[in-house]
Image: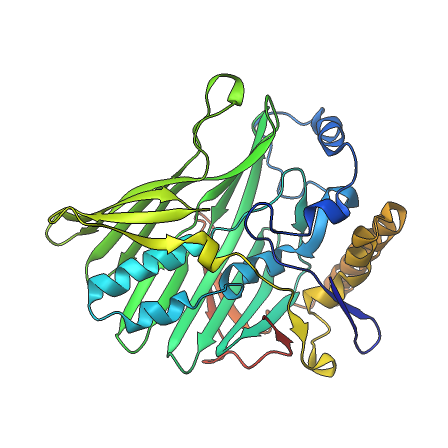
Length: 386
């Protein structure tokens, strides 16, 4: 944990989630009897219920906002996969590297706990090398986060939107993640469009958490497409089986031809097999990319925005790290009450709120939120990922 003095309060940053056994978060803050508490919390919830606005007590939070988790999946890496995407010699080389990069945004998480639901207008702004990342909560009903990241040196841009919709399934919780993601390699005039897997939280018979579902990646300019399936198979009563499994293919949609078969585990290695030559090679090694990650540092505390997640939730994060659950409860209530007061005051004045960093539009009958950045380049951030 990193605690640095800011303007009037503390900026609390924590180590990012990484491969199992490497993160120092889980053993340092988890409240006791989480499974029993979770079962008690859900005993009156009907299967099929939407849990989007379900309020979790502070003991079920880990010390991060959802915006921080979202941003970490982009800037917390120990190798520069984006540069590899940009430097590919052919469209197929670049596309294969983009597939590997997309897999790298799938990160481990912890059973029984969840990040904070961001407040309206909350932001998270971090730089890693030449990559500047900005995330903003552009809606709370429904909850929608928007991300803009740019690297002027590599001439790369990312524009994402994300809307999680968790539903209770009786013995599990399925969090569908709606929204679209774009990665633009501007030097090559290529845009890669993709979605992300869903999060499956098993409560019974064996507690666990996995990323599942289908991810489609396409580049309209080249006609290349990837169809990737995230799977988690279990034997009788949920024991054994293969977890964190990936299987799929890369194909040329104009020729209806499969070029590569994709196979592996997103927390280990992922390989592709050339359907013509039979050659097999590793395109992604999780240990090289999401291990050894360090806590971000504060470069300029005075420049941290008041809306920064690490400031908004600082008292709650500090209480969770200290296992002071009574203070955590109070701190969470303080943030939520301030948010309710702001919304009430705005409603009384008839004011319309607009995001600071995005222009937002959406179709009421679809999940497609269009979150267009208001600036071409994301500025350098006062928080630096190591």
